[in-house]
Image (tube, rainbow, N blue to C red; front, side):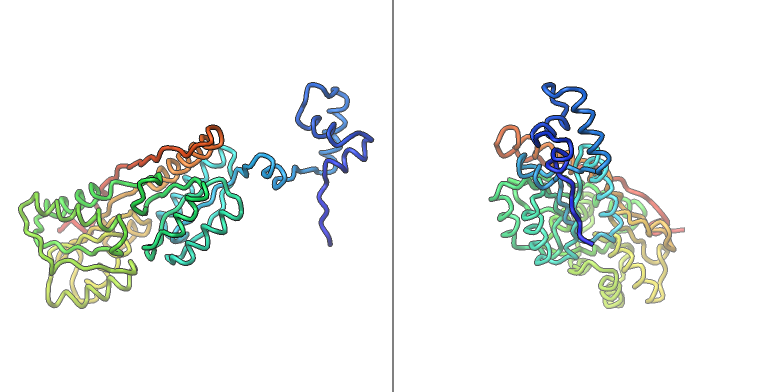
Amino acid sequence: MSFSQITIKDIARELGISPSTVSRALKDHPDISTATKKAVNELAQKLNYQPNIVALSLRSKKTNTLGVVIPEVVHFFFSTVINGIESVAHQAGYSVILAQSRESAKVEAGSLKTMFNSRVDGILLSISRETTDVEHIEWIMKRGMPLVFFDRKYDMPSVSSVTVDDYAGAKKAVKHLIDQGNKKIMHIKGPSHLLITVDRYRGYADALKEAGIPEDTNLLFSCETGEIGEACEEIKKRLPKEQPEAIFASTDPLAIGAIKGIKEMGLSVPNDIAVAGFSNWQNGEFMQPTLTTVDQPGFEMGQEAAKLLISQIEQKMKDKLDPVPVSKVLDTKLIVRESSIRK
């Protein structure tokens, strides 16, 4: 079955008036009589007339659409961010197109170009763990596309961002582990090139320094995939050589992997080794033991990122100038659960 969309010309032909009269009647133009407006609107409703969005966007140079590129849609944190983005976007009259990079720099680059070619008004981006070359981001910026980083960003002063205070959040978690009487604290880093990994390590290192605990490089290692299985296997390799009193993991998946590895080595959490993570994944609350973690305000992050992007889109449409970059940093909250409290 073929699909034929009703147009203004169809309404005009049916009523015996010009297409321009129909267009002005639909816009409630004061020069069009009440009777004509009534006839046009009634027929438009009867024929299920819908404005041609593509044609409107070509005229206005605006599609009222935001592109969002995230590493993984199944990630609980990113799903809360998406909810925050959509709540603001829909209220402001914008639709949202979502793509996931699946932690691939190549897929991320392709998604950005697809969204640009689809004429989105602006893009929200959280970079993949593989992203080290920002040529595809610079390609977007050179073409005047408004772009805002959220959560994971690249160090580009010309691009706005909404992040959490990763440094302070990590410092809170490690201070808590120290307050529980732990001095030998291992740190599991995430992908080494991500700024969140760097900032969370700084929080860990400064918490130790302020407590007068020397940093031990034997208690530091990275999980470049950021996955549960990698953390589990690394912990099992290291525990026979170095058994820490506590572990601070850069993310909840790494903390969950650490707990799994500790248990498989016949040790208990938290009595043998205390564990704290970062992200507040939903399943951390239902683990045994429940996971101490740093909560990131994902919904608020999505809201703030969407507000910032929409503001920049509308400012650029009005002033024809690139907006001044803005960096918003949100606070975190330490959630203490069973994994860090010795009985």
